[in-house]
Image 1 (tube, rainbow, N blue to C red):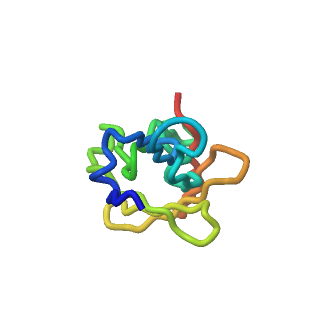
Image 2 (tube, helix red, strand yellow):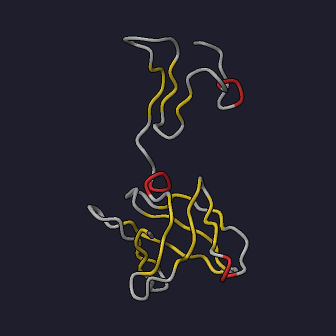
Image 3 (cartoon, helix red, strand yellow):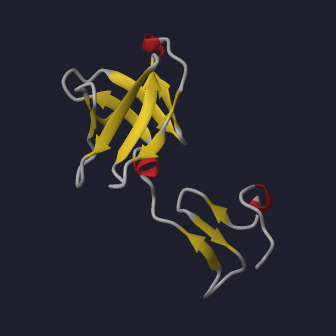
Length: 119
């Protein structure tokens, strides 16, 4: 009803993207829009392999930025599946699916790798 288009016209109008909120005004009733964090939102940060602690890279926004050792361009991430705990990305042309284990911060990938948050 405010005539705002998402996201161009909300800049500077109380947008808290990390929290998934758009606030208009102050006080009670100020929050206009909220959302539950997606799987992509929940896996932000640095990741490393569980078995050898090798740093894989960092998920920032909807991209995986690979550690320089991999010499790979960023991979686009997208939520996948109805369960809300899967993500997909292309790596060297192959589609990989990762599942965030409920109650933990572990990503299990379709190629068998397990990632945990990095230091």
